[in-house]
Amino acid sequence: MINREDMLELTRRMTPKRTCFSRVAGCYVAKDGEMDGTFNIHFGKLSESEKKRNLEIAKTIPFSDTNEQLKEYAFPKGPGRKDSMWALLTGMKESGLKDDALLSIFYEVLMEKIDFNFDYAIMVYFGTYDIPVKGTDRQWNEGSEEIYDFIIAAVAPFTGDYEVGIPEFGFLFPAFSDRSSDREKIDIFNIDPDDENKALMKLILNGVNG
Image (cartoon, rainbow, N blue to C red):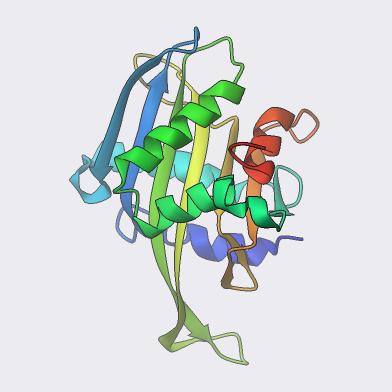
């Protein structure tokens, strides 16, 4: 189960003045399934309005209804790990989204499972959170417990001319559990918990070739 307080702690660093994000990448896809451009940019180079809009998109994932829209899942273990989505996401995170080859693979495998009848975007954010020490009195102390590097991905429709709307699907990787990184788990978001995107969930959990 996801602790709501963990997610709220993360979102407090998702503001224009205190953003935890250093990079955003993504691709635009036409409703016929054809890719219509990609981008990869340092978050600090965005305009103030672009920062605000991207923070709204990324924040949707951890700020959603915990254990309803956003649920925690464990990755399968075994010899197939090297060809799995887990390995791809780990590589993307460790590169800080600076490896365009890994991002291209990620876009392609997701696009194969996305069946939307509208134009959409795949957005990926890289963030770093210096987890502060929390005392027994629940007050923040000086120093840090851990550096949590993570990626947030969102699949969202366009609401206008390349204006990205509210995400339909997404995830937080690695999971943020008990105020710590859990690389064996992932938090997956579905905007409608009663109509989950099973194809994308299976892809994420069972691997690129699964």
